[in-house]
Structure formats: C-alpha cells, structure tokens
Length: 486
Image (cartoon, rainbow, N blue to C red; front, side, top):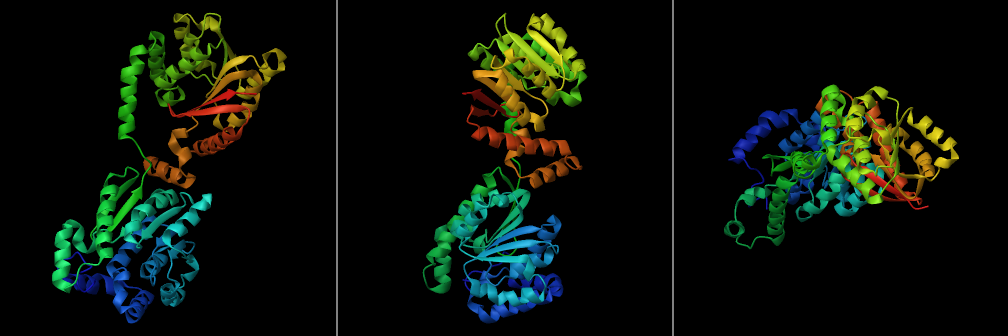
C-alpha cells in the first residue's frame, strides 16, 4: 500500500525528504537510525508499520513537554516510536508496550538495550483489548498513565478509546496514529476504490476500506467527545492528540441556572432569600459553605415527606439549610444545631426569628464530636431523631456516622453533604492535583485532598453498611441519604 498511496500528507515526497534531511536526520539518535535501518532490512515490505521519523520526533517532543513518566503503547512493531518516547522520558519513566508480535519487538530490543532504555519498557505479548483489560483489572492503573500512543488495529480504535480513558489521568494525552489514512478520509469511498484500482489494477483491499471507515467514525466521535480536547496533527499519516479533561460545564452552569430560575427562586421563602443575600454580603469568599438553594429545597422536601419532628444538624454556618428544614417542620418540631461558629449562626438568626421558627432551634456551640457525645450521654436521646443533616469536617464523617446511628431512630434518615466533592471522587488524586495546579498556579490545599480521600472512604463504607439503605443524590455537591434499617 505504501507504493500505491503515499503515507505522507505533504505536497510532495521531495518536501518530506527536505524535512527529514534538514530537521530530522541530523537530530536522530544513533540507535533510532540503526533501528530504522534494521527494520527496513528485515521488513522492507512492512516498513509502513513503523512510524515516520518526523512523527517519532514529534511524539518524543510531546512526551518531554508533558514530562510524562508513565506511558502506554498499543501496537509496537519493531519499536521505533517506543524507542523515541523511551529516550524522551526521565530515568524513572516506565512504558507498558502491548503487541502480539514478540518477534518484531525483539528486532528492536537490542537497540533499546544499547540506548540504555530497555529497563523502562515492560513488553506485554497480547492483543490490545486483552492487554488493556488486564491493566484495568488492577484498579491502581486507573487514571495512572500520562501518555498513550495507539498504532494498532484501526477498526478497534473506538473499542480501545473507552478503556484508554479509564487508564489516562485527567490532563493526560492519547495519540491515535493514521487518523487521516493515506489522505483518503477526505474522499468518498467510490473514489478511493477507483484510485486504487487504477494504480494497482486490483480491487482495494477490504481491510484498507474497513480501516478508512473506522477512522472516519473515530474522527467524528472524537470531535464530539466532551471528555477530551483534540488536535488533529497532519504529520505522518495523521496523528490525533486527545487530552483528557474533567467534564466541566458549560451545560452544567446553564442547567443549574435553569433549575434555580424555574423551580427554586420562584418558591424560595422570603427569609431564605434574604439570608442567602446576607450570607453572600458578609462571606462572599466562603459562600460555598452554605448549601445551594436547590439542595435546601430538597432537604425541606425530605423532612416534609418524613413528617420529621426531631432533627439534628451538624455544621450550621449561617443556617440556610437549618432555616430550610425548620420551615418544613411542624410547629412542635425541634432541631438541635451543632457548630463551633456562633458568629456565623447569628448572621442567620434574625431571619429565623422573622420567619417565626427560631423557637424550634436549640443551637449548641461545640465541635461536632463533643456535641454528639454530649447528646449520647443522655440515654433518652438514643434512637429518637427522625432526620440528621451533616455538613461539617469531612475527614470526621465516618466518626460522626457511628454516633449518628445511635441517635437516629429505625426508619430515620441521615443526609451527608458534599459526598461527590466537586466531582473529584471519580478522578484519581494525581489528576486532581494537576487540574488544581493548572487552574490556580498553586498546589492543591491538603485539606481538599484529605477531604476527598475521606469522602471516597465514606462512600465505600456506606455502600457496604448493612445498617442503612442509601441513595446518592447528585444535587449540589452530592448528598448521600442513609435510611437506618436496623
């Protein structure tokens, strides 16, 4: 096929040779040159399986710019791209290389050894899908790879993609090779068949046609995949770079505002609105400490559905959630509210008084653990609370849980706030740190990282706690409802 359709997108092979002669060959590592020549000698009829030299240099540049330390290559052949990236990685870099053809890999291995990089490479003799599945069976590999290069079975690229995104960290890059497929992706299939027939006097190989169709489908899919940013690089036979992103939210912002405008603000109690505005005026830098308005409405709905009469709130701030639930309770309802910060609570107190619910609230100025212990010292408090809302120190949630279950009646509900922690619980820690660093130009606050880890642990624990039924509600920053069953 290399003799019938050129594997370059340049206007002429002369221009390609000019690039090789002026900027590639002079910089090509000695072992890369020797590997290229050895590949040509042994596989002259398959030399197109190896990446072009300018593409090898480009991949090495990407790896260096990323300071990639853990990479994955799917489709190795004799290893020109593998050696290119291995040379670009730091001494502690590690590459997992997957290919069924060990014989071809072993053609390149002596050159990797001579270059001093063979120790970075773990060659896995496997088909790509089985190799990827094996990596995914080890949960530690999820979100652990910085860079992935794919140059294997084209019709399987879409299948690889889903697995690769699980292995790739947020901010990591997957590079798909041959995505312009000898420039035929821009031409209709009939014209491609006619061109090949006129040049070779034979029908186009079905694998060629099938690969072209698969790559067109891949290109369309990647253009709409919100999990990645893409760049189509017209080098070699086309390389598509896909950078994994944390799905942010043009849409999320729009839909959130839509919810607020259509179903929340029109029904928000006057004193809740005034409290929300007063909180913003006094604590604009801490407004995230207050629950979102839609979450406040949700908590009120839960309290009403339960006809809760005795509730507990751990973590109050200015009291938006406290006022929401107090308004939802019957006149004889009673709330115990625990927080160390009386000053913030007193910002909200006038609005509770104006709403006529301050008499339902017993504010306890205390840290949460001491406050819970004090409640438990009175044996009459065990099993009497209908509803508990927890929005306090995240690393202490598991400690609170044991005390809360003693206070909660069977059939009662505890709601834990922030259990999705800015959507970071679904992303590996390294990616979270990278994302925050790129946005703030600072290291992630350790409390943020510690809270994320604690919430992941809590979520795992609650899923297996036989004393409760749970429902993860994706409202606000995530609310987990736990109904005590025994």
